[in-house]
Amino acid sequence: NAGVIQTPRHKVTGKGQEATLWCEPISGHSAVFWYRQTIVQGLEFLTYFRNQAPIDDSGMPKERFSAQMPNQSHSTLKIQSTQPQDSAVYLCASSLGLGGRGDTQYFGPGTRLLVL
Amino acid sequence: GDSVTQTEGQVALSEEDFLTIHCNYSASGYPALFWYVQYPGEGPQFLFRASRDKEKGSSRGFEATYDKGTTSFHLRKASVQESDSAVYYCALGSGSFNKLTFGAGTRLAVCP
Image (cartoon, rainbow over all chains, first blue to last red; front, side):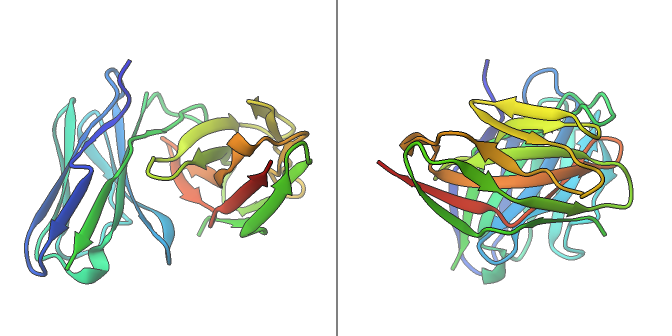
């Protein structure tokens, strides 16, 4: 049973370039979450989808960041005009999405983004 | 807003020592509480959760009890092993689908 798959595992971009990160949730999971992890800020929520619909993007930076879920088997996080401060590990998680306090998120290995 | 406080940034123990990592939370609602463990180069792994007051969660010898009165969910293990060395995160889940708010993490190092 494959877990959450994230690609690429590592990405290096130059300042000002675009970065697209991919996530494949666990089969059968209807909720997909994105988090960012840095040494300084720790683990921060970015956004999440349920049944492909965006539910809460309150953690997303207002500019340059966008997320989509075009079908139930993958989600993307796109960062336009990347800046050095965007360097972080971006984590995707999925859950059954049944609602209530029983829902548990399972994380992928993350994509380590380095902006030079 | 919601927040989670882990008192210990780092803990160093010897094998078979008793472990306690303190976790306190602040939330407007009645959250679910979680412990995750993260190994180098990997994403956080779900350890266990508790969803209501006085419920005990446990896994792999680790346990914690939800205490609504003291807003705590302290992680304990009676006898740690070198393989338990990792970073441990306490988290609370809020909203309809348990959006997670994490503590800062506690790095546990266990020496043989």
